[in-house]
Figure 1 (tube, protein in one colour):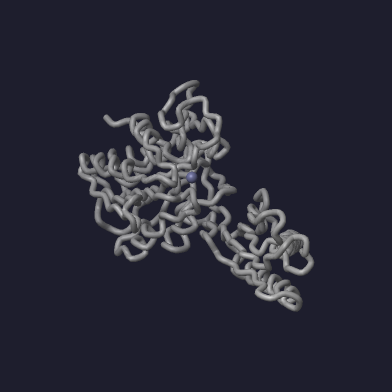
Figure 2: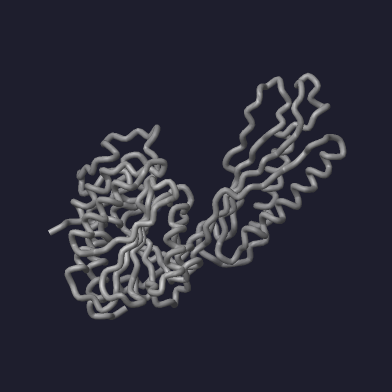
Length: 386
Ligand SMILES: [Zn+2]
């Protein structure tokens, strides 16, 4: 009998840091599934170095439940690990290793659930969806979303197993990441006032971003209980690399907008762009070739599933919960919900307090509880009680 621990050990053993291929992991799952009569759909990226995997177990009908997880992990570079990150270490009732919490623990449970389900006669299907490149901004899952949008048979609901300590989370913010390229003029620094310094332009843009944040916070009228319920505008990197004795002609400002579902990030970006345009117009009265160009580098939508929806009630019943919550981090859930129109909640083992850190771990009890949740899910699919 295949155990969750064995599968987790295999999964952690694949170094699926986002910059690497995840194909060895995907092949492992495809083989395991095919030994159990489960057919996998593998969706490769353009250069065939990474892939998503989708599989359905049970009757070929619409409905059923989809279990979603990402296979990639964040880097371990420069982190002071005291255990080998790509080997599963069991100690003090914890499983240590990169990805145990975020989120190979859940993926291992989903794989075992699929294998168990393949030996039963389901009334409604169980689906699994494993993606790549989630950790660099929900990039890889798009081909899977496209497939689901066109699929004649769609899951009725989705559980994204990101760590929530197996509480039911119904919402998170969306994110739009932007680079602004500020262009000024190069020149000898001894004659600096004769040129438009691109860093000066960039710092004026940063002031606009900070003013935008202040205005949004001041205007917030809701009563959400989230840590920070309103949209945030955050500058993460400012880059200019010319020599000190050269007036810099280029400066990049990297910023992100994280927003609840009720806010439209492109509208906020439009306001930022028109304020930036005024800066350019002012500078252009004295200098030539001044510009600020904006480029959206990454975006995913927010998730805000109504607490009264069937998926919430159903997943609450699997974990004996009556409450709902939110998560601070982003997930693929917003895409499943908005782009593929599949009602989605987030519910998975472990806590994000251990995610992305050295000596990442998952409590063994959390893994057992997750397996128990999915056992109950399978029972319900057998008796058709979703
Ligand atoms: Zn994750």
